[in-house]
Image (cartoon, rainbow, N blue to C red; front, side, top):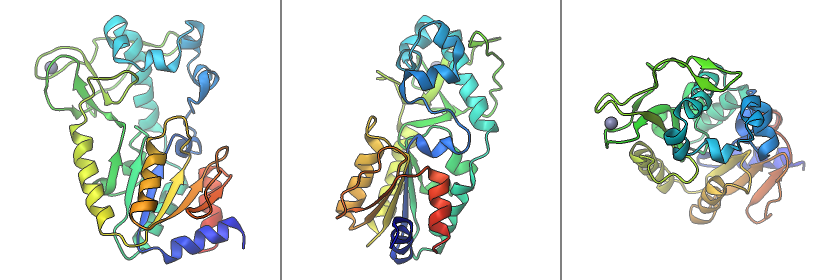
Length: 271
Ligand SMILES: [Zn+2]
């Protein structure tokens, strides 16, 4: 039996589908992968020219020291994620989830909002690193607010925000994206803590879920710790889809060395 066939069998037998997605999930939608400095610099030549690494730009400190650069980067990403269509693999996952006897759940480290954009019920999604589609204040405790009235105007060649910077509706101070950055002690996680509670309630009712992990590397372990927990605590089976890091304990499930979309299509053909 091929790995794709094994994965299909696990999905057909599961009482619920749990999706766990990392950065590799977005690659097939055409989103840049920031893995390694090279990938980041290919996507942002202006930051390459300035010698700035992802970790340096994606930091609350940059919102203090150079806010038009920080907002140049995040404003560009906000527009990019808004205007990029989630690939067909999202629809395949949603279809499997609907077919399963119990309500499924999604855990994602991606801040692009693409599960919601692809039609997943927002009540089933936990965005563990927050979302680029919300803003928070850099000064006061105002609750995070939706970014839908923000329309970035960016000088892409320089990676600079043009015009007045986003500000807090409560106090007027500089706003920032409501997502987890590097060395970020100021992230307001309340909206995502609520998501987590809902997802945990869904998980607690599952008896033998299949956990489909997509494009989640070992470098930032939040997604992998989640899948590990679903498999051990909820008696689940793991389907790990990862182009480069597919190694999987056979007692936990199967590892498939493919990109997210081709793997999902391949599994779907067996269902
Ligand atoms: Zn404020």
